[in-house]
Image 1 (cartoon, helix red, strand yellow):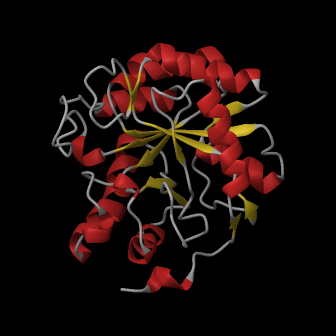
Image 2 (cartoon, helix red, strand yellow):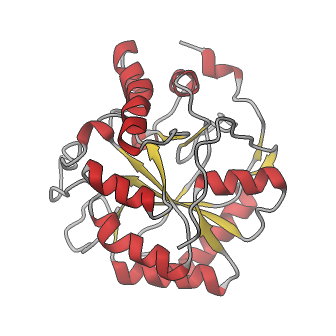
Image 3 (cartoon, helix red, strand yellow):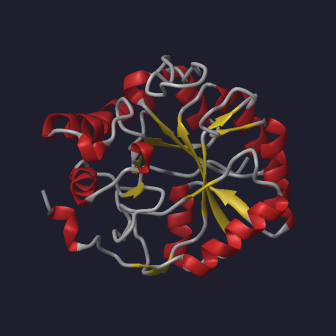
Amino acid sequence: MAAPVDHTTRGVRVAPGPFPWVAMYHSVADCRDDPYRITVTPDRLAAQFRWLRRHGLRGVSLADLLAARARGTARGLVGLTFDDGYADFVEHALPLLARFGFGATLFVLPGRLGGDNAWDPLGPRKPLLTAEGVRRAAAAGVEIGSHGLTHVDLTLADDVTLRAETAASRALLTEVTGRDVRGFCYPYGAVDGRAVAAVRAAGYGYACAIDPGALTGPHALPRVHVGQQDTAMRLFLKHRLHRLRRRPLSRQVTAREGAR
């Protein structure tokens, strides 16, 4: 795996201009019972990593990608993110990251450590990492970020819940890892100006969505879902489409972020 980096830097610089490709994963396990299509098998993940390497691309954490972009050295880098903090990350994804020399960011739910994906009404219950599992991933060089406290749609949350899901989750995750937590990932990819403002106020240096719409800036970073059906041709098309569609990334989020 890529050498561990210092993720405790307080400031996160995001240079203006188009943002590199960021792949969004979830669970790495048997995908036969998966109505949400968020699971990839270890074999498929290995094939996708081979595709990246074959095309001169290297997977890195969001912290490393942002730092490289600020230096102007992000060419050939792809952000790898894993949402929800499934226990299978340590069992299946971590060895593959080490094998390929890739880095990644793992977004976890500190309010559900050791629990399961209770927010999914369909499909099987999947166990989530314990605090020890999160620390094991961090010790291996994985950047740990927050996915909120309990996986709540922030665009529907009241003010108290919004603060808990952003600020309280960051404080708890910092306590678990012993490291400053700089990254956030919006549950369900749902984001609006109010959610962005809460994430910024909580002290996060950046935040990931899926398609943030008109919102831009370091707290509304776009990502592309990668799943079991993404073979070489689909990966090629997704990567090319991202290069054609990505918008310039301004340093600030639009004025909508302060709207309530």
